[in-house]
Image (cartoon, rainbow, N blue to C red; front, side, top):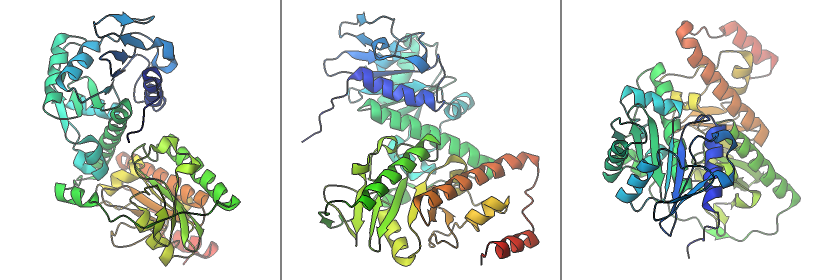
Length: 418
């Protein structure tokens, strides 16, 4: 039985626009969002109202006969929203905005290749392109509608940003956020060297259906489990707010005992996780009625091999993920903190993280870190991204000068590293 959607269109639009504005993926005056309702009417953001201060009553209701109900006129881009809905009746939510990386592609007359990241390909598919026309014009609506009619759910607009759409506004937002992340990552990676892309067979293998793990009904949670659930959700939320992951990607887990750990669920918005959403995994069995992150088998193997590892994170911070799209090494010998927390950042796909080598790049799939606690693993994730950003920022200044062998030996001796 399908879950009933009880969120009013006004509130669904507000939730999406608040996230888009908060993370600087649009400006005060830029962008517009809409939802096509079951009765054929449309809810859309208003024209000339501050995107950082929208209220639910500002959202305009356009009735099936075309008349608008609300305190403001509808967005001037309403014609292309209408044209998309007419061309693609399967679409019920639309996001248009001007995030900087996708605008960069827009002004270069290019579209991002989503095969850079398997999840981007899965969420966004192939990206369409619409030629320029005057904003708000019938011609622009026609150009965009033609692009969507060919099948894409994401379309870059020449010199005008991007439009994404989906069966819900949430899905349209996920495509928008994921595509901007992919675009940023590709741009960053191109500063490092040749960008590696995945072939379709590799992407299909990554998402091939795995056999369902056996399930179990857990006992009532202990106070230790309750606290760990709260802590995991807190750090997942922090990682999202700090743009170390996006709503559609990333997995956090933490060990509860020798054979049990908690892990984030599959397919849930990372920004809105609650303690009850987390999945208990015990001896290869999963908590009844829940689907764990696809990374849970990898995490389980690490926990079984490394008794001292208490937490593992798979994440997608832009700068470190850019390194994962190339063959350029991420050298942590930048400052003492980076070396002490990261040591030698691995990139061998056959190796796993350990406390001796707690960070690795996953080819075209972000990064993985581990630690002795959730805080320890998260600290390493932050330092890994800061180190990657510093390395990228240093490239126009000249070759990297790593810390000397003597300095590394002194750190190893002073902190008991081997």
